[in-house]
Length: 390
Ligand code: GLA
Image (cartoon, rainbow, N blue to C red; front, side):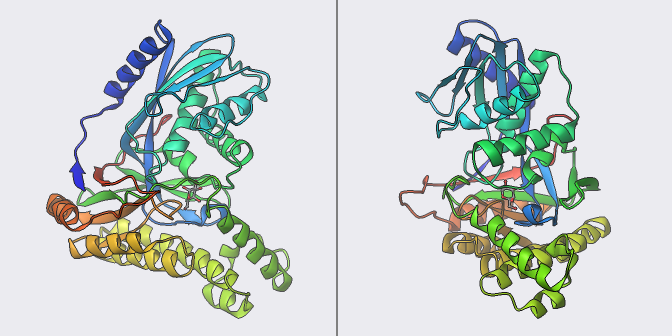
């Protein structure tokens, strides 16, 4: 494991995408769009249940270059030999990386946006690492298509369209957090996303805080994995809660005592406990950020990890071990980030201790080898940046 310093900027990745496009298709692209990945400070596994979360777009980018064509062709620098080709009228999932592009284009045909185009994708967001490379590719694809068509779409509608692609085309019942962060992120700022009424507020991030994203080296996919069980369990828990509280809109409208009092069957009791507790932690985290109290924020982050491990059950022994190592290395909080079951651990550390902490983590954490392992993960020190459309 090593600290990965990056000099990849929006501009450099955009020109890499243009070069890759030209090599791939033999002529220049008409447009290039870049999109950042995201972290989520706190509020995990709650967006599909109407909870609150606190994501931020970060300085790891993906770029899509495009030009109009009679059919759809898509090529990714990360997946050589896995190019996609589709007609514009019968777009179907093929099971590969390009479904993230195809699904968005299928959604855009419903809005009468022309989708015949050649696409070339380059990325500095490690896939399967929990930094939302799939939302970034969807958002960038939507924006190139809109640009080629000379059409505008409100930021929220772009995010919603990309989520529909993920839900309907890829069959992943995810929430809207990733797309909102990738589209609407702001420099040095987190977004407080209320999934119940879809309101987004901004929360400035103190410069004394540094964010480390440590890849566990265990790659996970939301498709066909355990992720889908969690939204299903959340809706089942809500259904049962409604037997007691008629007209209840979201589990997060209950307080922790009311959740316990429901006596839901296992594991729904634990899932509901996580959703309600995590949403309360998000509220407290915002107060900690506003007060600049990073120690208290760290406590909330580590409590979030325990809840994700014990009640939401999306952690793994390697992720728990990485969390422990990060805490020993001086992080004030660390937790599994994103969907879980692999991916990355997010750590909060004082800015002047970040390099030292990263060195200790790099020294102590050895990702295990195995079929779903990618070998040595990397440590990214990330910063909040503007989203694709801010
Ligand atoms: C994935 C999904 C999000 C969210 C997180 C867990 O990133 O795409 O909608 O549910 O997992 O918080």
